[in-house]
Image (cartoon, rainbow, N blue to C red; front, side):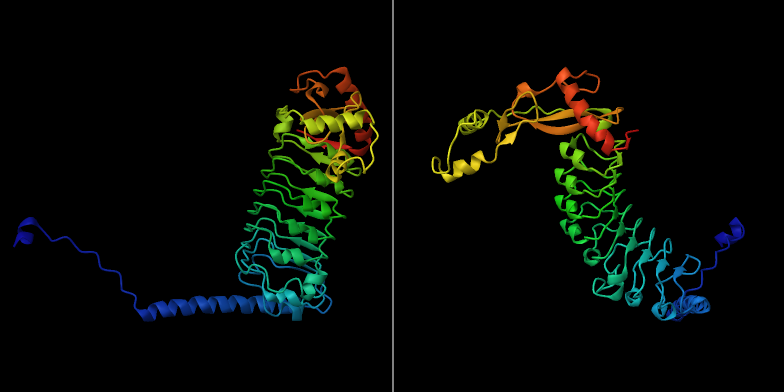
Length: 380
């Protein structure tokens, strides 16, 4: 009897009771009952709030712990504003589609972004025709949902703080858009089609990974505010001066603010280009019958050198250069422009270098126009 010789035997811990299938089923039943009770409580609360002329409804996390209630459109037929922000929703159900007067839907800081996050048939439903403001910021969308691109009456779209890597060219289908917020994503480029939004006033693309701005954005003649801070921009296209209504341009946190880039890569002009330049600069007369059709077309593609003291032209061979332009008499921004040869360049390779008199005079001329157009440039 070893145990008796060595003292009392150690006490063994009792085994936890084994849960059988019946116990697990009971637990599932309890969870289902709790969810049903929560839905019933929400339905009762909404029923107490409902009114035939109710226009605005805010469903807080305290009120909404599951999907949207099925009777929403019946209880609030005149609903115009619905806020379900911060409720943890993973999908916006079909209950929304039957709200014919809903013009503002706020669903920020949820778990939307997976398959089925948006109801099917959104663009063809009454909601698709009535919706004007949609805020889906702070969710998990990895791409702009195709269903949103069918909301042709949408005036404000916010998708900030998601996981977007690109802007689809189909964004141009949202012809009524006035406000577009895409900040805080992983966007690397801007499609030129974005310029086909005729009423866009505010464009927010901050806190992304954008490296360049397409010159086509100069077609956004209604644009008043352009937020580009905290990106990877090293220059701005010269065409940005054509944004005649722009009042605010935010550029802080970009490489162009802390260091300036100059690319003097230059491919010598071909013999064809040299001949074309000579014809254009010396005004050599010619008729379509004098030259082959392809050469006549080629001569029509001549671009004037922006250097006012040059007067030259170029076709395919040009110098891409950063030019410093004064805004509001205070800020100097690098704009991209194209010259016909390196001899037209001015030594402005860094922010600390002083410009030649020619460059300064050009900047002053452009600043006199730009200062009237742009009232607020944020660099720091």
